[in-house]
Image 1 (tube, one colour):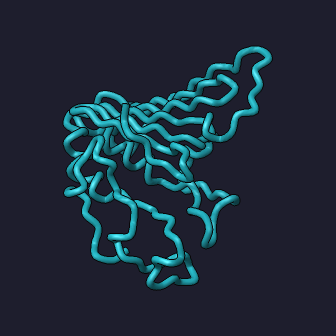
Image 2 (image 1 turned 180 degrees about the horizontal axis):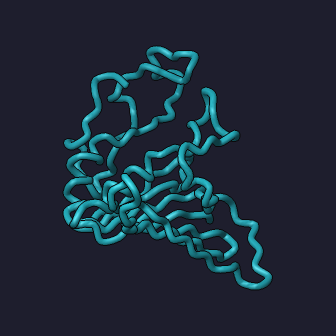
Image 3 (image 1 turned 120 degrees about the horizontal axis):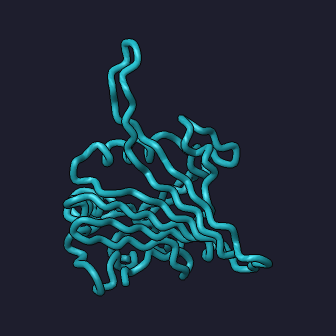
Length: 200
C-alpha cells in the first residue's frame, strides 16, 4: 500500500501510481454538492488568510483536457461517508452537434450516481472516515506524474520555535532545512529526487 501523507499523526492523503493509472485517496473529504460543477462557484466558508478560495474551474479544465486525449480511458471520483453512503462522479466526454454558427464539439459531462446509506446507519466517526477516491486512467500518466507533478508537491513542517531563524506574521518562517524531518522515510522513494534548499 502507498505511504500516506500525515498531519498530526493521522493519514490525510495517499497517492498511488501505476504506468497507466493514478489513484488519490483523501481523508476528511465530504461529498461535494453538484453545484461545484458550475463555473466559478464562490464558497462563503472560505477566504481570507486562514483558508483557500472557492471551488473554481481548475478541476473541470483539467478533466476536459484529459478527456480530450486519445489515451484517456476514464476519470472518476468516489466519495464514501462514515454512514456507508457512496457517491460517484464519472467524468465523460459528450458530443454536441453543430448549431447555427457553433461547430460540433466534445464537451465535459459528469454523471453523478449515489447509493443510499444502509437503513438505520449512523456514525460517530470523525472526519477521517469520510474519504474521496480519485481514479484517473490515462496511458502513460504514471510516468508523467512522477516526472512533472511529484517534484512540485509541497511539504509542510511543524517545527519548534527553537529551530526557527525567523517567523513572519502571515505564517511564513525561515529555518535550517537540516533541522526538518526527512521528506521520505526510505520505504518508497529516494530523497535525492526532492532535496530541500539550504533554508526553508
